[in-house]
Length: 115
Image 1: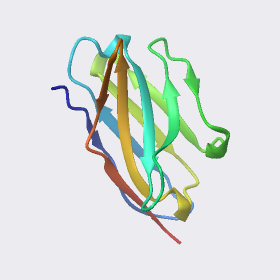
Image 2: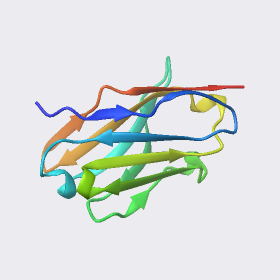
Image 3: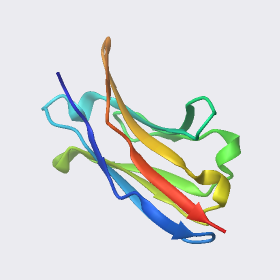
Image 4: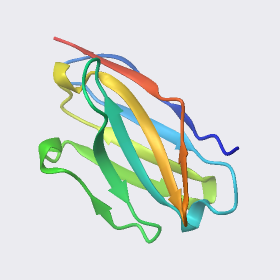
């Protein structure tokens, strides 16, 4: 069972920044599409950012250009840079890897933005 490992969450004031990391074991990483999702209490899990194996990125309009996803294939790691954070960004953030028909998830990392 492949387990992704997220880190970098924490408590930050509104307007601040955080960078999340997701480490993915395995030589398949460079071939995988990677996504960040988040889930706030009482809400559905939503897509935050997407990056292809080739490094192309895509974001929902709702992210308003404040988030940036990147990857370092040499380190088997994907990142999520989050700027201008708002209290409504408070959620558990999950990393997802899609490789062929396989989908892998991390355990999530809590991000809390105080007003």
